[in-house]
Image 1 (cartoon, rainbow over the protein chains, first blue to last red):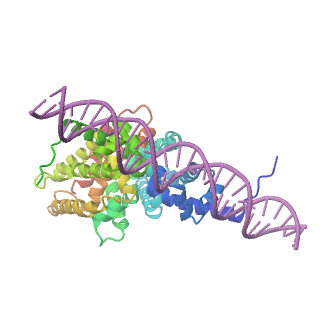
Image 2 (image 1 turned 120 degrees about the vertical axis):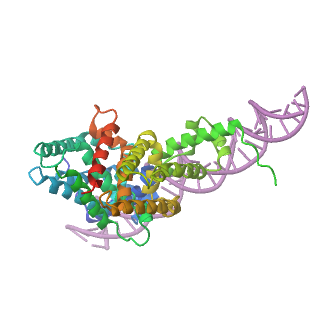
Image 3 (image 1 turned 120 degrees about the horizontal axis):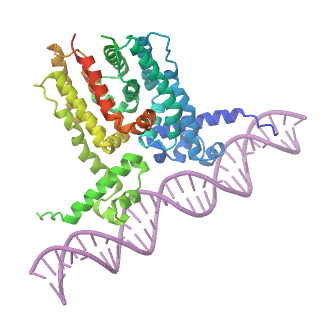
Length: 205
Length: 205
DNA sequence: CGTCGCTTTGACCAGATGGTCAAAAAGAAT
DNA sequence: ATTCTTTTTGACCATCTGGTCAAAGCGACG
């Protein structure tokens, strides 16, 4: 067995720069709309140099996507079945909203991928993702059984949290256009609105 | 003044076929990802033939977008300030959800455009759209003043309706993957869920 | 210093892409 | 049937795209 070559400092730096640049470009243009040249120049490299680190455009994209999926689902994994139901759900909403605020490019990357039919992560969606959501749904149903939250369709509850929070990243341009120039940061209001919404919907009785 | 040439039957048919094909392709691939050849063959025409009807790919896209924007906002315009507040809002939610079910391509087209920075409709967003939303927001605030619905941020209420309903068109693949093969039509459940959600949030007291 | 492996580059390629054009084919009108 | 306009097409073009390759540059280490 040949020892795998050690990863050099330059490799680490350039790979990271490439992935960051690719996130910029892919999230704004989608896979087809992005060009390797754009990514390369945004990363401060020549095209052949970029292709020295990744064998193809496709490889950069899937590397990004794979690395991101886990991060993206972490907030849902952090939901604690032993905690207070409403507080847990509100905390999940808040974490997702923070991700929209702090990582809008990642959100848009997923949005682009899924709108365009999720050709590269269909498997993950009906595997990892589905299992995780099913588990969460069971917890939510249990909370409803115990009368600790009002009963709602748990799968659609999860969908609604995703759509409401990601909207502020994916449709940021529209949100800002509608709110006007005066509003520099829509997130505080969004947070208050969503907390009110989920509290009223989920409070029993 | 030269009389404008009459529009022939063939022109009407082919223009319609092109726009329909373009909707298919653009909504799935975005502007950059779509090719004129794909649109042409999907419309049953050769590429030069297609370019006989529209001067450029860009022209097809903007024609589509312009034609669609009005249709897309009609449900919001139909909201009646004189009606019952909760019923009006629920009806708006329902109409938007029906549009996601019946016109998913249109929804995805807008989603693609906005995610990618809305380069071609930024003006419309901060003009027509913003004015319409502002008017609606005033109505909603008035209803809250009168105590006929609970007070919520009206702009974010509108955002939430958009995001929740369009999610079922734009992220259709994800919704179906998570719900599993057993579910053939997520819309009835979605409708029930959204009605519950908005009713609980907006019912006063 | 010299060597060896990692990194970078310019030149290049084949295929795709948006778009043009002259000419042929097909209708419409008489 | 003849003419005139509308429609369709094949051939073509410049540019861009993802990707290759051999050669040159560079850095760490003895």
